[in-house]
Image (cartoon, rainbow, N blue to C red):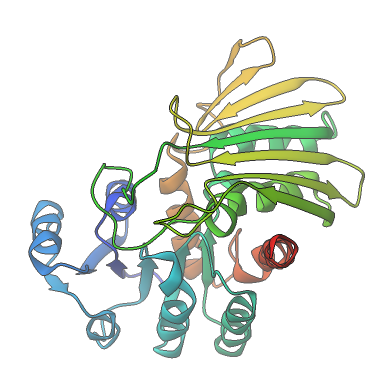
Length: 317
């Protein structure tokens, strides 16, 4: 594929806008359709980014012949069914994390992807952040082996708000959404499948119906361990902080930034063509389409993560 890749983006909220910003830096890609829940708000975003077609119906965009690929930044509960709709319409698809919140639905997406041969990947952004890429290169060069990962995923979200502080139409989830980042990254960085997983959770929120605090322990087949603490109750710095404890060093990754265990900043600006993990994720999606290959973070690669989340959900139940 040498011509411009034409994209439909579903979900014009906080994360959809991050993708639109990233795509502006990528040659040979054009967003031609924007799908949102509220037409007026979606039109406003479309006007800002020069997107001609606006709709509240994904199927309307899937019916457009010029659309080659779709990026889904919609509520978690819609991810699997919308991914299937895209694949069945003959469109390549990148779905934001998580792929699903019911494991068998994720399995069905893989089945249809394999049947169609289309590119389908999940937005496991940590694989693409320069900070985590730097650690990955060190591991692949045989210069560092993970003994333990200690991860904190903390938000202050006692009401249904998004990253922009706007009311959300759906409920987020510590296990299926936020833990998915770390469960996948741990196995990916270790290069070893997860063989043990345990979880405990705090009280269920009376209005939101979800646990607001959770603790997860993981072990990979190679012996490495991971401890993950998650909270929607944390009134402090927000986000996810990763501590890699290895045989030759300790590294702290905070999104696209990386530090030694002694808080000395590591220059990761030359790791990839951008310092923006979302943009790098999108670049991989479009490159895989052009090159007709499996992308990093493909459905097949990340599905084992969702098997672990499913098993943890059964444990917690």
